[in-house]
Image 1 (cartoon, helix red, strand yellow):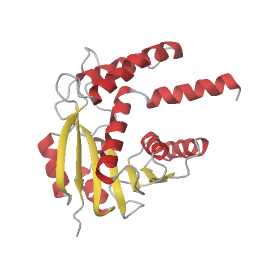
Image 2: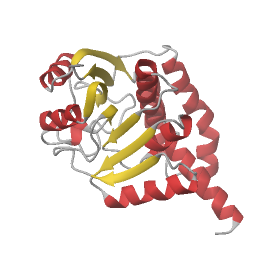
Image 3: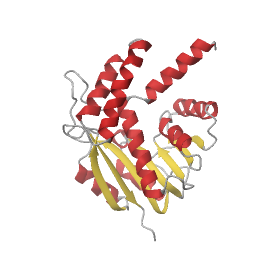
Image 4: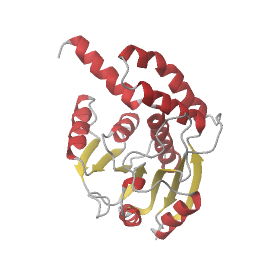
Length: 249
């Protein structure tokens, strides 16, 4: 690969990672684990439904003492994640196939993350039970899902979520599902309000534009995420993040 093609490939991957919705979801999930379990601790973290592995890779880069395992059904996505882990020199990230409705390939985890995958799983209750069983006693489960009544911000934007089998969850329903799975101390809070959601919809509309246009738009889109993380936003929540612990007994 010539140098210009290599630079372009790096920029394309960074722009994919920096999509507003993805930036916010990754930051919130990683921040929840670091806040509750300690950013400098030696943690075993499982990224359930990891897809292309960008969450696992980001956490592996930011926390060299963490051991990350990404699990997904799609081998093509896992293989791409493995290549990126090698290219970035991240030996603390590995990627293995697994069905989230069955016992997970790693047990005794300090934390399990399920970021925007539950709404794509037919038997989400079974998947939550499997995630809970993969935790050590006292381990942390962090879940992010679309809010059931979410609406697009811009006219003409899609009103459904990727490969969803259900539209989303209410805060009460999500809390009940996590408690039913065996978790305690469950806390649910809203996130991803209209500022970040609108930025994501703009990004979706320009994602096939030229590289220069996307690079020029990036500071504005990233700024929307930064404001959202600072609590500066507006509108109803489009997503929920929840965390709970496996009983320490």
